[in-house]
Length: 287
Figure (cartoon, rainbow, N blue to C red):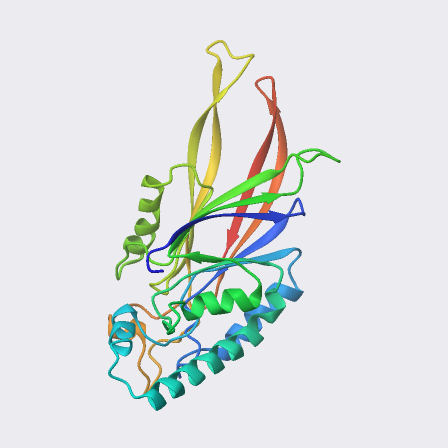
């Protein structure tokens, strides 16, 4: 379903973990950096403590929404449809082999705008999610990560909340790209992380904000708590400006792509003050 909006809860048992945002892989094109992607999967799954992954769309490079419309117009011969379906299934299966180490730690997969719409109405992103045992998150999703526990032997969880979509308003300039993600906070105001893909840029920009919290010991009955939000563009694994190849960056006359993913280290810190014992979410991003 196009433009699908979802809500998703995902349980993480650990009190500290590493959260990886990756997308715009574009597997299947000549400019896909397969070596770099395999190295990313290897490092993220083997060298990071408690890794989890949020996939941000455009895993294969097949057809845009308009391209799918033309292909599903009924003008293809049956043999042509069979060939396309077998090729797409092969690409999906080969891509899933590369991300197999993420199984069980894949929070979900955002749908992109490069996917194949199958005859049964489902798309390749949904097919990959089904086979990987994870949730298809649609075009945009509000995600609640319930992790660890606030106290030993307690069922009360900590939370990290994410608002993610494949495409946010962007542009050629660095500021335009990240400002498009900041705009997402006008829709969902109190997420901890806002993330988008699509434009192949890789950013992780923090923004401190103040929240009003009740306080039994304050004269005015409240205090201000500072928290950190992050605004993320999840990068790409499609090389740009490679001789004798086509690609997204050169088609838009954009800056060369900063290949890779975005890492966010997540943990909780207990803080006492204003008569309250608070659990503070600590986020630290790396690119």
